[in-house]
Structures are given as C-alpha cells and as structure tokens.
Image (cartoon, rainbow over all chains, first blue to last red; front, side, top):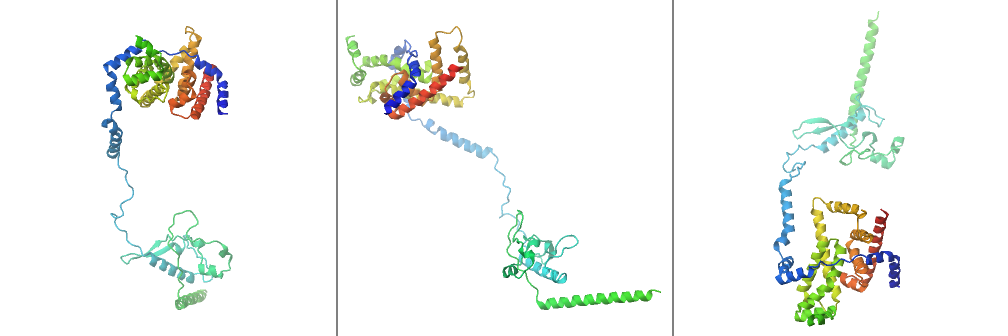
Length: 236
Length: 196
C-alpha cells in the first residue's frame, strides 16, 4: 500500500525524474587519480587529517574565552546603572509624626466644631475659603510644638460614614443610602491608615460649652437691645 | 597486469576485502576508478561547485584509504563510500554557511547568481540541454540540503530506497517522505524558473 503511494508519486513527478536522470554527468578530472596517489605516497593528508581529529585545547577553550572576555568588557566598560533610591540605612532619619495624637485631636476638633455650629446638621460646614475644618489636623512635633497642618486623611469627608449608625440602621436620611468610601473614590494613591474612631465629647463638657455659648448669646442680645435703646434716645 | 585483470572482475566488496586483508593498492585503485565519477556527480549536484567537489571526492578517497578497516563486510561498499562523501559534503556546506554568516558582504553569492542568470538565455550559449541542466542545478541548490541529498541519491544517482536509508541513516519511510517533499519543492522552483 505504501509502495503504491510512492509509486503514484513517482508517476506524478515522472517528468521531473526523467529530467534529473538526463542531467549531464560530471566526471572527475583526468589527473584525479594521479593527484590522489601522489598525496597518498607523499602522505600529505596525514598531517591535515590528524590535525582535524586531534583534540586542541586552544580550539576547545576558544568559545569560553570569548564569552569571558565579553563579560569582562561589559563589566568594566559599561557604566554601572545609577540607583535612584538612596540606601535607607544611610539616610537621615525623619522626625516621627505623632499620627495617632493627630487623629485623636482631629476627632475632638470635629466634635467641637459640630457642637458649636449646627447641632442637628450632620454635614460639615465649609469655611469661606471652601475648606472644611476636617481638612486640617493637629500635629504634635517631637519638640512639643503643636502645629495645624493640612490633613491627608485618606477619607473623603463628604462620603464618610458612621459605621455604628450605618450598621444599626438608625440613620434614616437618604444620604445614608449613598455608598461611603473607606479610602478614596478616585485612583489616587492613598495609604490606608485604618479606621477613624469618632470620639464623642462627654455631656458635661457639652453642657458647659452650651452654657458659655448661651451666656454669650444672651450678652449679645442684651448688648443689641441696649444699643437699640440708646439710639432711640439719641434720636430727636 | 594479470593481477589487475583478475581484480577488475571482483565485486566492490571483494576488492575492499582484498585491500583490507593484503593491503593491495591495486584493489584500492580499481575502487577509486569505479567510484570517482559517481561520487563527483553526487557531490557536485549537492555542493554546486566543481573545484570544491573535486577536493571533497579526493578527501573521501583518502578517508577510505586511511579508514579501510572501519568498513564492515555486512554493508554495501557503495553505501559506505557515499556516506563518507555525503558527510564531507555536508561539512563543507556548514563551513560555507558559517563563512557567509561571519562575512561582512553576505550578498556576494546572491550577486554572482544574478550575473549567472543573465547568461542563461544568451543566444551564443551552448545546447538547450546544457541551459536546462544549469537551471535544474540552480533549483537544486535552493532545495534544503536534507531533501536535496535524498533526491540526488534517488533520481540522479539511481540508488534504491534501502541504499539511501543506509547512506543517510534514516528509516525508509523518512527517506520516501523526504524524497517526496524534495521533488515537490524542486518542481515548484522549476515551474517558477521556467515561467520567468
């Protein structure tokens, strides 16, 4: 069966095969045998043939030597890549920021801010410059200097959620249906520093500050009424 | 003289046996005479260079002379000598390829072929068969060496599949498929050349 297949193929290539068979025959030159016998009698071939077959250390180690030479050239000639990053062991240590303090102070600051401005409104009021007080944080330096720095807390203040309220379902406003972000909404690179614990100020402090604010308000109202009265008296 | 006549009537295998056993140089010479032309033809068709081909066949004969004892009587002498010649021819091709890779002007060979092309159809050229022969040789040189070798052995040298399998060290099935592929490729090349 196999033979038949190849015989069929021979039939297919019959023209080509006949052309190949009819090719002119190449003949050896007339002095072929003379030269050959001369070489054999003079033993010219021996040196050449034995040279080819003999093991030569030079030939054997040439590729390895070339590779080694290239490696050495590359090592010494090519400039070493400059590393952009400094060795952390050789770096001047940075002053440690008391981040925990800062976060706690911020929570207290926020509580005070809410209490002083809008009692019922959960939303943060914005200053005239358009910045929330939450955008700032109090930082205690190692030399006990207290600074107010721009906060890089990784939470968007507009979208922060009170987890306790959220879980218990006490918040009924439509705002709670919005999805809050723990870290950030955009693709900005923020490190997640952890959950922020909201510290509610104690009731006594609240009442004390309320009393202060009420007395200030009363004093203001009194002052206003006195001014109005004095102006009425001055009028002819 | 009488010895020569006597030796000439011997087969290849008997002659090499005589050469192996008694170191009879006449037996060697008769074998050289018998195989120089077929080997020249085979190597020339494979390498495509007459001078190189002469050197390769000379080397084949020298190798045969030096390694006569490596021949074993169970093999055919013709396949043994064709194997030596084929290996030397392949080495030559490898050496050439390496030289072409490291050569700065790689396209020299291509240029020389182009010059030859123009002379193919010159009116003052010899017979049509000679032109055809050159075209076929050019096409043969474009066939991959693995296919070229078996096609030459089969269709030009007239060896059987079994002999080719022995020369090339391949199975008969592989030999047949390689011959088939080589022929197909050669035919395509020739069709293209004839069309041009």
